[in-house]
Length: 265
Image (cartoon, rainbow, N blue to C red; front, side, top):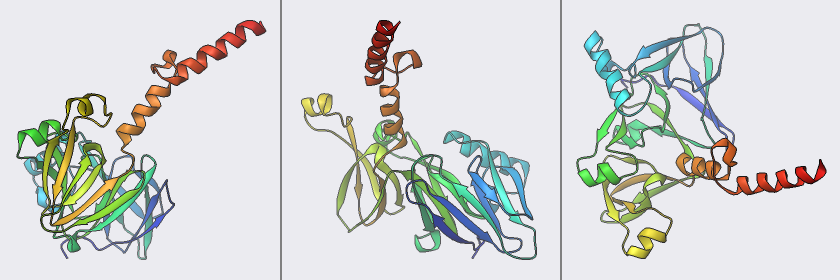
């Protein structure tokens, strides 16, 4: 293996975190801000890009790796955690919102996974976190995840997080699945990905499901989330009182509460 070989355990149900066990001199790379806790003799270091050998050791290689992450909307930096002790040590990473953490062994997935741009959580050192350009303009502009998605390449373990419940679906050759664009989490590299407009004017305007579907054609495997963070955030914003920047039912409740306060004075 080119990547470090790490062991892991998942804890929790809806608010999961992952325990990564490192042998001496093993390293795991994670998104900045995903650390929950770590044992002693683990050295934490901030690096440009994804810290993989694929991005090169020179200044230009590091800048290129960092620039790719900037394009996907991620931080320029990532954090590495290395076990400098003589025995096994553990480090823990938590997902940033309610959902599931999906462990992916890239050596069993043909060495590459394409995922939404904010799904990556952590990976064994050596896994390359890059960008995947959608070749079709329609897919790029209307795909919900923009023109660019993330790609994870290597032969080690990677951890991806998503909202709600995760459904893994294997597509047979020629089988097509239509998915809400925000619910797509990840797919193997052999899956064909395109965008399809919702048929019918009434359905498109009043259906409440958006104007486009993601159409995925097999063979391959796709991972789907039941609660995209954008959907959760929109519901919370709609329910917030008007005074807090929202405009939903919370404003009505606040008005009724204010009416009762007026009579109590």
